[in-house]
Image 1 (cartoon, one colour):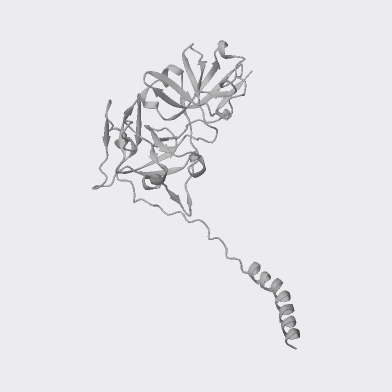
Image 2 (cartoon, rainbow, N blue to C red; image 1 turned 90 degrees about the vertical axis):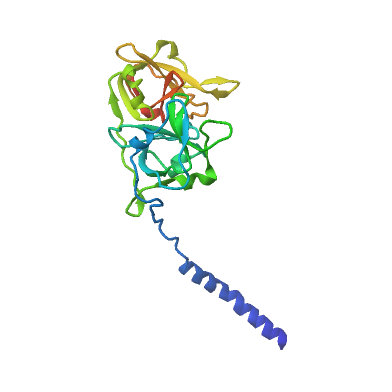
Length: 280
C-alpha cells in the first residue's frame, strides 16, 4: 500500500516538472534597461583651461581633495584595431576643437565602453597633468614614470559618460581640415583629429605592408607620407595593428589621423584602414 502511495506521489512530481518549468519561463525576470546616470557633477572648468595649466617640461598633481576639477571632452581615438594601446585621445569639442589631450590608462578595449564620439566627463582630482615626451598627458601618480597609467580598478573614479536621456551621448566627430602636413605639425593640433587631402605614401614604401614583420611578429612601424607641397610626415602603427598585413596603397587621397608627437618627432596615428582614403 505504501509502495503504491509513494509511486503515485513520484508520478505526480514528474508530471509537475514541465508545469513548474513553464511557470519559470513565463515569468523570467527581465534585465532592467541600462540607465545612464551622470556620475560627476557639472563641469567646473573647461578642458582648454585645464590643459593650459600643464607645465611645459614638468608635471603637476591635481589635489585629490578640495575643489573638484571636472571637465567635459569627446573621445576621438579607438583601440579596436590595435592602435592607441592603453591610451585614449580626447578633444574639447566634436568639431573645431581648441585643444586635445592624451589619457594614459592601464586597460584595453576602451572602445567598447567609450567609442569614438563619446561625450565624457573627467574628474581630474588625484591625477597627474603635464608634458611627457613632447605631448600633454593626464594619468596616474607613478613611482617610475612621470605620468603613469590609471589602474583599471580606479578608472571609473576619474571618467564617466555624459548622459543624453537614458544613454551616454555619442556624437559624430568632424575632423579638422588641415591644408598640409607642415601645418599639421603645430601644437594646437596635438591629440586632435584632423584630415589632410592630396596625400600619398612615399614611393619607397609602395609594395610594403602597413607593418614590418620579424619572425612572423609585427613591429611598431612608420610609413612615410607626402602632401601636394612635398612636405613629409609619418603614419605610425602599433605592432598590434590588425590591418598590418594590408599593402600600402598607391595613388593619392585623404588621410584622417590623430596628431601625435614623441619628443621632436611628429607622428600621425590612424584608427583603422577606413581612415585612409587613397585611390589609384
